[in-house]
Length: 557
Image (cartoon, rainbow, N blue to C red; front, side, top):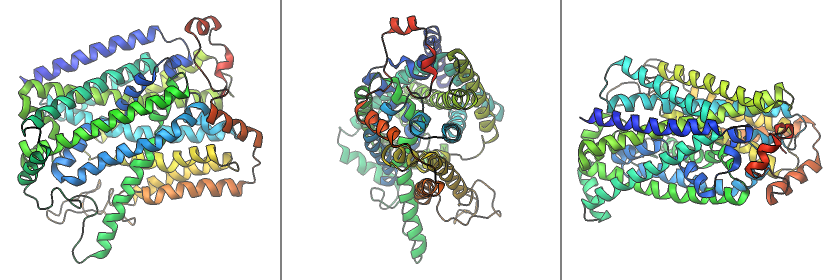
């Protein structure tokens, strides 16, 4: 009965969101609409969409599973994701005022060689988005196959292709308007489903959190389940170097999670969907509140699953623990609740991948086609057409890669995407906004250095080769046992790659000899701090009457 219920709820969500998508298509008439939703979303609406973009399936299913299997240490993920928004709150107003549609608008405002900067920004946006996309797509195949009880490899491939086709439709036809409303619906469903599970699981323990934690610890069969060190920063008896590396690896992961959010392309692009900086600030306040409540509820989901389902049952279904929330739903409410939570997880994946594809296609069309190939003077109809075509290309690429990697454990790609965003994008953004001496050479060096450094470190890390389970002897890396070329001891590159990205940006700017324009820096400072001259949404009738004149297609106006 569960697969039938789940499939029915899948179809209901798809029908509703497709209706919204085609409504958005009928009301999308130019770049402002396609890229920024007409800048017509309120702070509360965009806050819901921001939270929806951020609360991915990895958050909903993955963190609950980590808490269920690892106890206290699993909750550290939640803390890292939440603290990240505090940094984002400090930057959101500045980026909203300085940019127009993409991160590249902020980076290129004051530099002399815009094409080089925009090309680098496109490379970073697409790379980060594709890595994040790949993890979500592979996860979608595994999740839907599990919920619909489709065990064949063909079924998993069909699932990946279907999810990919849906995300292409959402972006190609709905643009930012359609994608934002899908995110809002998904955020409401996710918060509602998580709240229902939290209330139900706490009611089993008389709303006594201490009783729930005690039952989870007793049922875990592990000493120190409620103390740190069960998963991150483990003490290795007789091996002080191994202990140090474990602790450094955790610090590296935390740095990537905290610093990466402000540089994620699909998060940055959301700041431009509101009419002014005040609404952007309100958006982040809403997002902080929603994300904070959500991650607190993952505490109840994870420990509740450990207490009511048991670690053996969770690990038997999925060794990584990704089905913990689903098994908890089944234990609390039977097949009906399981089907609903499964549909919510499916909606979560569809919404997040749509946001990632939109960020990539916007960057390709607006930055590369509009400003590099067309020298900043494209027609709006051309730019929107290229954006729609780019969404198909990015979508097909993500589908192909996900099908190839469907049997691999690609969970590390989420942490890698955050590390790359923190290493490549954040240094360029911060130095562009706050360092007078910064120039286009520094932007390009920082982006390529941060991207290349983080990727190289991961390739040379135990994630790819050389990590072996000490008990079973099985390979825990991407490559099979016997292949070992890792020389970098940490699994998370952020501790090294983030400072390296800043170093590349600073050295590139100082060694280039490129002259800076002090007036443009002053303009950027005034604009970012006060909003003077920033792009604002005009009345709908006025915008239509102007017909999206060509001055809207220039760099940052």
